[in-house]
Image 1 (cartoon, rainbow, N blue to C red):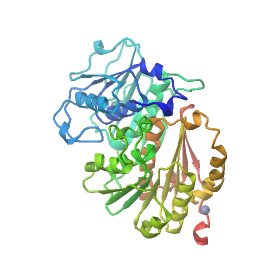
Image 2: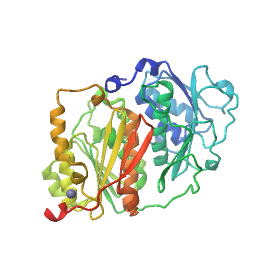
Image 3: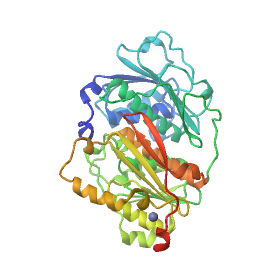
Image 4: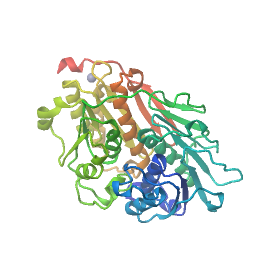
Length: 428
Ligand SMILES: [Zn+2]
């Protein structure tokens, strides 16, 4: 694995000397293992006695009937051959814990960890929510629930950041303490039980999504939108896969040189048989937008260029289409939403023109941190952007009219009120 894009901020030697044991290879265990492939650790033990029932982002249809721990370890070996894996296909016993281990209970079950002194995290999920704890407290309300892909993908990204702080603390890190909750409807809460494990369902069967960019953010937007049963998902990227992408674009293993959008669609589209997924091996431009944009109901901006973002924003305003934009930095991530007649456009919210000018000035300074890009922030923001489509669909204005900001160093999420509608639409 090429760790070039995180070497400026992470000590890969420390990560390489660490070992993690994940109990449970359902959605949370799958996502954690997937992200760990990008982060890079020395050893990973997966414990699960059950067999794969259905395909997901990790398990292929051919894995059905195989032991989950074994199938997951096989996948980890494919994605990052540097990680030494061990699959245990029987139930967990305390004797399986290693000396310098970090343990994650990623089952929805209560496990007795009394007497264990190693660092430990407990994470559970339902179809609509997920939680983790850092204080060895089990999460009994999730017993018997099925781990849903989107809540699991979100909670795993935030949890892996906390695990990173535990195995490789960095100066200025503030660790999260206690219990963290994420719910698709009620969003984030701390240190209390989740009262309602279920939520409202949203119907996207007549909707078309446009994903611009199939890199770090686009990978996780696409993976999570596959669970929404869209009519069409079109994903654009003119970029080819390079080996320094793989530390966060973890679905691109063994595909160096191939097109990013094509690789995602070829590898994952079978997971949503009701959705027609299509890719385009090109960078989106104004002539395409003029010809095709009116047929989309959602635009996801997953690019790293302020200029492209401004172009998408202008078009979203002109055609009155919700636009969800995401950004990542070395230690953070953000998501911003434009909904016609409900919020200001994203050019008014973020001032793209100023950001375009600033990014031009920054060329040449190239600080290591500015150039760093890690898996957790991409997975978190991509998953959250997908969840915002649901909030827009359900007209949950209180949620989508807030800017989302994740600060990894402080271990916190802020939702900051966006300005109300602007008059850019009437000018165009
Ligand atoms: Zn505006």
